[in-house]
Each structure stands twice: as structure tokens, then as C-alpha cells.
Image (cartoon, rainbow, N blue to C red; front, side, top):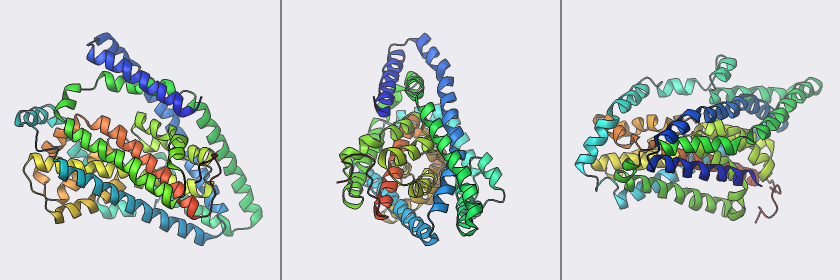
Length: 426
Ligand code: ASP
């Protein structure tokens, strides 16, 4: 049985058991699922522990084996352009849907008051976190780590990627004897990390069962009702982007068959759905790209860690809908110029968001401020917080699918045939 089928079974079973506990009012089962959630967290820790060794080893080997450093510049340029363009498309889809469907227009004032009351405190603490976030200048400066070991210890991927690429580039020009010794070592680390992922993935279906079961068991279904239109608009936008935009890119730009591509990579987005974290999913994303799709290590090791940190189409799309929803509820009219500002800031905010659960709701505050909605930040966040977890799960899967689509696209433009899966190439 394929890994994605096993994960899917775990996911569906978890959702069913969680729903029975929740809707059937079985408090003991809800408590049990809440209690065993720790096993799911243990699994997330297990996969996250591979991230640093894998990213460093595979990126170092990838960069050093490029041979020609101009190739690195070319791949880097294409990847960044691709990430920015697809994110802007995602935001545009979100804005279009929010303008046409107007999810905020039908919400009763009592619902707004209730949500603000229920989530006001939690929203205040998020706003607090956002206020402590570093400025843009500091964020840019932090890409260059003073201490790469600290960057690794803090799981700060962007500076670590920067350091590793510089180091890999330097390796390409030193004496072959020394270079090969270093590369041989990191090759070993890379292979051992991949083996470890395969072992850990044996546990994935059970972990997913526990993670999804506890989320569903404790989910406020009553909230879903009052925020139904908003939730559906976000989900519809995410689906259009995942199965529309990406399918077009796969078919016409990467010259791959989308109907084969999606099932081939499915395990990674499913894990992203269950963990709400692009970072935690990263080892499986890399493994899927290389072993299932046949993307070279040079491309996958660069495009995917970068994508997990800066490419978040799902997050940006969700932010666009969320800003419009909050504006509609508070009667703030956002003109076309404001919406263009949203395209820009949501694209950049998603770059700034880390690949961890709920990061997107914190950077949403930047987007709200950019269109002069500062006074509605706290109440606005309180409105949407109740359904954020479920939307986080879906947008994270889209983020990861976007990274994989980009890797396939870049690999094809670099002349790779992606014969990893029979019939994948059109
Ligand atoms: N959880 C998302 C991710 O890891 C980020 C977010 O939208 O909150 O990609």
C-alpha cells in the first residue's frame, strides 16, 4: 500500500472517531483523544529532528555538485521569481472570491459580538507576539547568520540555507581531494537522514489518526456554522489554486501530467494537513521530490527548504480573504488601490511567516495594518481565530504542494526528464 493511502486511512479514521466523540458528546472519548495527542506531538518532534541534518547535508551536496556556480544563480533567480508570481496569483484568487461572494456581509452582529468575546483574549496575545516581531530591516539582516550553529539550533532555516550555499560554493573551488572527503561525509549524512525518514514514516498513519482525532474531537462545530461562508470561501480559493493554477503550471510549464503528479506527491500535503507545519513536513517533501518524482538533489535541496520558509501561497490567499472578511464586517471599504496593497503585503507577509502552525495569523496583522485597519486588528483576529486551525491545515497542504510544483517546474526547465514515475511526464 502506498504511503499516502495509509496516511489517508489514518486521517479519515481520526476524523470519524473525533467527530463521534465531539458530536456524540462523549466526553471520555474527547478526553482520551486529547490525552493521546502527546503521541502526535512526539511524532512531529521525530520528523522535525531530521530537518537540520537533512537540509544542511543535502543542500551542501547539491550546491557542491552543481559544479558551475552560475547554474546556482540561474536556479535561484527562477525559483524566487516563481515563488513571488504564484503567491501573487494566489492572493488575487482570494481577493476575487472575497469581492464576489462577500463572506462578511451576512454575519449577524450577535455572532460578531460572541466571537469577539470568546476569542478576544487569545487574539490580544497574538497581537502582542506580532508587535515583538523584528522589523523588515532586521529580518533581511538576519538572513546572514553571525553564527550558523545558532541558526541551526533555532531552526532558523533562511540563514542556515544562506550559510550552507556559501559553504557549498566554496567547496566547489578547493582541491578535489579535500572537497571529496567533505562531500563523502555529507553524502553519508544525507542518505542516513533519508533512511530515518522512511523509518519514521512507518508511524505516520497512527500519528495522523491521533493528531486529527484530537483536533476534530475538540473543534467548535458551532463556530463553523457562523463562519461557514468565510471558511468555504477560503477553502474554495485554496482548491482553485491547488488544482487550477498548479495544474496549469504542471501541464503547460513543467510538461507533466497533473493527474499523475498529485497522487505521486500526495503523502507530503497530507502530512502537512495533519501537522500544520511546512517545516515539519520538509523531510518528507524532499524525499518525495527526489525518490517519487525523480527531481535531482541539486534542485530539490535548494528549492524545497527555501519554499518551506518563503513560499506560502495558501497562507497568502487565506490572508487576502481574511482581510476582506474583516473589512466587510466592520464596514471598511477597501478600494482597488487598497487591494493592490493587499497583493503586495500578503505576498511579502507570507515570505516572512515561518513554516510552523498558526504563523499566518500573526503576519496577517501586517496586512491589516497596511490597509489602515489597525484599529480592527484585535477584534478582527478574534473573529476568525475559531476556525483558524482547520484553515491552517488546508493552507499548509497548499503551501507544500506549491513547493513541490515549483521543484518539478525548475527541474524540467533545467532539462531533467523526471522519469521517477512512469507516465508522469506528458
Ligand atoms: N502553518 C503554515 C505553514 O507551515 C503557515 C501558516 O499559514 O500559518 O506553512
